[in-house]
Length: 543
Image (cartoon, rainbow, N blue to C red):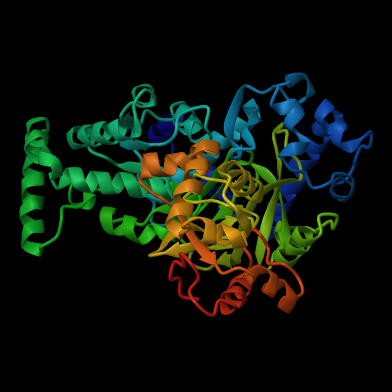
């Protein structure tokens, strides 16, 4: 039975319990579901060609043996099979392959197989997220077959393209613009078309990457305000009721001396965002739309694994999407310092409130990935919540792991990609490190650079010249980095040139070189303390 048929035939309470009942689970009940499903997955995965490649002839019969016998994995452990789409090696046949970036400039793409069971689980969990996004408490939600969603999602083969495909199986929500039409449009064309259709039909839902929804919202604000002469043309194509609402809102905004915002024209039932850096955008988005976005987490390899509730106070992980393990933060750093060190993991019932963890997932329902390091860090926000009536852990998404710099959900910049860009550019850079920073509440890639001694005297070198040169090669090597400028209008690169000898002095004083990617705030402050005078091209950053 489709979800919209359940709306007609079942009570709200029954529907809520069917999709969101995992929030009622005790910790013991949650772990029973986890353990049962992972044992089913271990059985089929161990027999597959992929499983045998990693297990090397072993066969775990318990969860404890599984965690001992199977090493922590990364995409490199699967690439030779998955990039060739070798179904015969998989635990179950893939019915869909999803694509994402692997490592910009080095390994262009990753492919992930989705089985029927995975897609069914994904669909159910997405409907749970919709229910929770539109509700104000347990048993409450507001979803209708006449609703419309502003389209801000990347199409297939990217993971967000699955969502409209799966939701169409459940409910006849109309996308603005329609999915097939949107896939053939540029990002700007899609925004304009979606807004104009919204002015005719209304907008009840909005979902996308936090950075993308923010950019789209700014575009909607501009169009709503009639910038570029769009005000009169809009009134020609909308209903009399919407035209009257528009004119009334314009008058009220003039009286309040502010620009027209989306909330003046549309009343969203549900607003969802995913990706990294969402905290940067949530306050602005709430101001523009009059509703705070609900965060959920979905990725190419793990599928849809977590969602906030009406309380907007941390994400709960669905028990039937993946089997979850967590690497404690200190263990993660030990492994970063020594790649031969095997970090320990804890399970969902062992996490500690306030602690940060790198997540490790084993995809259930015939998935390919086991004990897989996705590359994301979460902080446990607490065990249960009285307001929500829950007993299981909830989490805040922090960021990518420290050796990856992700800007606004678009990029995956690594040490290799920066090094490769520097080599291609021919710039005479002696040493460097990169850190993700926030300027005016927006993410930036900040690279600290020391030039070779004679490079500073042979040519006029400034931070702006380096920024221009390196930016060209980042865009050349990484299409996602290029899209930051092309799609969102963001130039995230900031360069600081330090005087010669700074990196060597740091090493002498602190006994080790500063880490190339995202050194700690304490280490960056120590490095900054070594800068006693402004070097050539110094950006003026206040350490």
